[in-house]
Image (cartoon, rainbow, N blue to C red; front, side, top):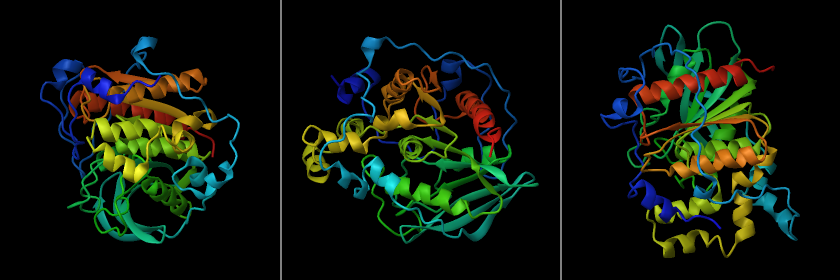
Length: 376
């Protein structure tokens, strides 16, 4: 029986709205106890080279503390399920569609550093001109590619790229030889369209997959070596991406919202506190449409994921339940899928200082092993 998220909320504290900028409590260094606080990362600054640290085993979680693992997709297909491919809310619908692969427009140069050049770009997605950033390393390419998916930022007042707090990670990884790119997503900044959110919608997933398709035409992008990184809502987007295609070599998720559709529905109701009547009017109820909700969730397709997965989450996260990471790790374990689950005791939703340093060090080592060293 699924453990309701309101029960998890009692365990980890009252819900709060998602933070749009990477901040952390002052006592984080004491709670985590690794290293000295790092200087705040700036968009134009080159981060310090990390030391590759030993990767401890994932924190053990008693089996009784988590809900049962979702059943993988290899169940009998019910009558009428062929219509699924036309439903863009489902993984089958995402797999069936054609991604545009249009030209990447360089709008202007954002920064020219010793190791990479950063650009404001625009590219086509569902006929919309969506903006984003592109970091191209200096030197001889083509370079392995990482897609950087930011989490929730209020669309009102969002400024193209400048409001994309995950560019911090994109800049860091670009200094290490990766071509990194991230979408602002439709409805954000100057991008037209409606900002629909990413919990039970797939518009942002489509924007990210169209960015990959566009990068296939970029001479400096080696998309045969491809990784995806996501934080918070961007983690859910990244889960859906790795379940949609077979070309992603590695996915890294920081404090990610579960891509299971029922988890997402409960998260919106019990953590974000959206009224249930509103939820039912917009999305129905998982109990009334169990087959549709099963097909909307990427976690029911984990048996078909081919890339490596690395998961990071803090136990004191008040924005996204730590349990979302645990259940993803357990599901991958049941399926025999290689993965890493890194737990950060006492860490909140957004990280700076030693927690960020440790997480980005593990992330870089993971991408170096499974993306940079992958055979094209």
